[in-house]
Each structure stands twice: as structure tokens, then as C-alpha cells.
Image (cartoon, rainbow, N blue to C red; front, side):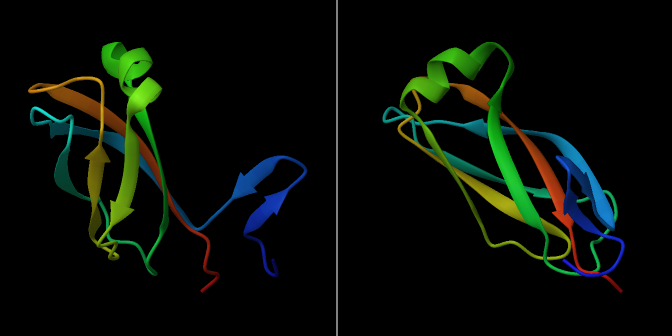
Length: 102
């Protein structure tokens, strides 16, 4: 990657890094979705890395899948399918970064 942003030697440098948590209510099948907004708009549509977080982590990861959809410079939607937590809430942590040099 050209410029002063990218991944080198195991370290990531990027123009805009944001991380946070998002609560997703699940139904009887362990499915659900929720949207979130970034604290500050990105300059380009970011890459988003999600993970289950907190007390739900061990159970939810064993059977759940997180997909990030509808990404914009202002936020995204997280979709959870098949989480072990049924009719409850799972917490998603995320790391979003814009690696476009401008």
C-alpha cells in the first residue's frame, strides 16, 4: 500500500480508526440486526472487523455468524445469524478503519 497508511511489520496505520460496541437483540433462532453510526464520518467507506464481546462471547461464537452490511462513511448494520443466545441480546465489538490515503 502506498503512502503513509497500511499494514507493515504487523502494525496497522490508517487514516481513521474507530472502535465500539453494538447491542443486537436476537429472536428465538438467534438471529437479529442493529445499526450504528460512527462518532466521526470516515473519508471513504471503511473496512469493519466485528467480533462477539463480553459475557456472550463464548456461547455466541460457538454457533453465531456476524455479517457487516450497508456500510457507509457514517456507519453500518451488523447482522447476527444463529447465535447461541436466543431471545436475548448479544454484544458486538467492532474496529472500523479507512485505509484510503487522501
